[in-house]
Image 1 (tube, rainbow, N blue to C red):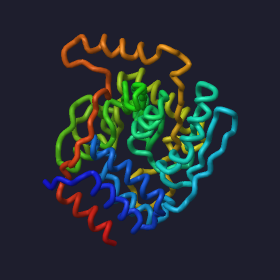
Image 2 (cartoon, rainbow, N blue to C red; image 1 turned 135 degrees about the horizontal axis):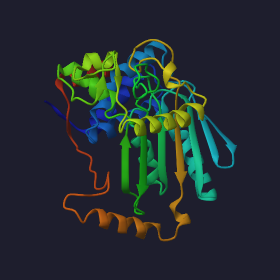
Image 3 (cartoon, rainbow, N blue to C red; image 1 turned 45 degrees about the vertical axis):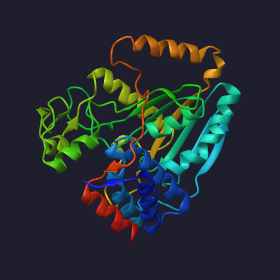
Image 4 (cartoon, rainbow, N blue to C red; image 1 turned 90 degrees about the vertical axis):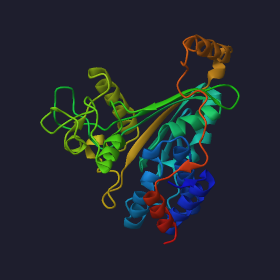
Length: 326
């Protein structure tokens, strides 16, 4: 399996997106997100998505040329209309405005509407934390989750992410998780590899537990913690869809399909300035010390490091190279 540097991954992905119709800024922002995902071992949100990005650029399912429209609808409420383009450049346009509002008012919201899938939600909340703010993010996805006891898909895996600054430009804490027991990508990757999935991840179309990924994809995923996870998933749906004017999960088409209607997804972020509490940093350090009393325990996301270079499957890298040479 070849080992590829993150610089090479980023440059090659950017060329691939440009070759399929994306303008320079959107291509660069998406390539930077892919780089981060690969460096952190998040294969589902990295190169795994690039071929579909390119196909959807050609079909018009995503607009790689749109200029996001940033509006401040209230003093601390910022909205960005992605115009059915990529989420990454839309976020990049809106973040400075939302950060300024949070510094002034102590808290702000950033609603990204009518966007392509953002893939790794934590990529965005990490940028908020790197700017010295607490970031909480929400987004929805294609319907794959039925209510507890039901069979009908209502909402997506609907992830949420949380990032806390350490006061030194890094992360004191971060997590990025779906509100289901497992992310949908884990199921599709297991199917592609011909592997079974653990029981408890999914139900088949009849509502019975299954370890067959193909049956799971015809059925539904299980909310983490049963009714508790279902409630969290609905909360995310309210914020990511209702508060951004984007599609409800029920109406979102498969994200990787090369053709079809735009994703029209929303992402919603809460940005909190911890400086309103003067001893916030000391309290976070105390919390970290308490957690670390048990051997091997730590706050989630603490002491993460990017791997560089990273291993990339040969067939995946051949596809990326071919896309970049179009």
